[in-house]
Image 1 (cartoon, rainbow, N blue to C red):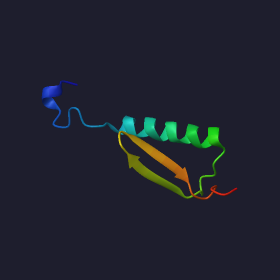
Image 2 (cartoon, rainbow, N blue to C red; image 1 turned 90 degrees about the vertical axis):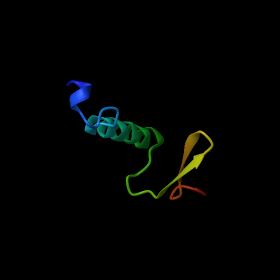
Image 3 (cartoon, rainbow, N blue to C red; image 1 turned 45 degrees about the vertical axis):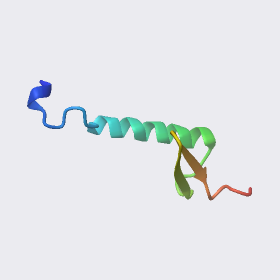
Length: 58
């Protein structure tokens, strides 16, 4: 597609969302987290911290 014809050029595409969801699913599997666990997302400086509040203290 020609970028001049696309008013959303440079914006995330739906495939970007699916790619991010695939990465998150891989993270859940690697860390053995359940999909019902309560997660806390926090931006700290130039990175994002994800804490699994359901698993803290175990």
